[in-house]
Amino acid sequence: MTEITRFAPSPTGHLHLGHVASALAGWRAAMESGGTFLLRVEDIDTVRCRPEFITGLYTDLEWLGLSWPRPVRRQSLHMAEYRRVLDALAARGLLYPCFCTRRDIMEAAGAPHHAPDGAMIYPGTCRDMDPG
Image (cartoon, rainbow, N blue to C red):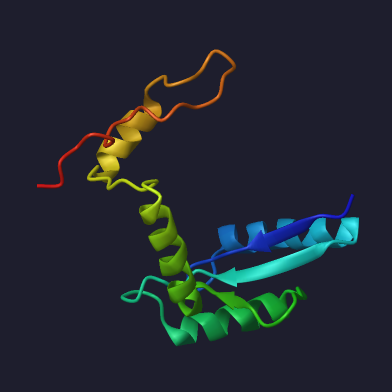
């Protein structure tokens, strides 16, 4: 079975050993199966993502001997596409706002919310919240 794997770092700094381990594992799995290793750049954090980190990312991965199809998908170049999908979901009434803090989410995620088959169930934390 061929595998498609991907490595999707946020270019908010230089690669660290955790990034390297993840990229190498994904690349190796793809190569061993005759598959494809995809690189996707998660550059939507406009405050911390910088062009020199993207350039460094490519340079470092190439130095490691990794290869991937081009062009690389940069998330920031697809915001209009994401907006269209969100608008379509909103028109169908399938979106709701969430006002949870990261702590709220961690606490909700730590609570036992499982169906009898073991699947996770959304606890409904923000389903009926008023944004005001």
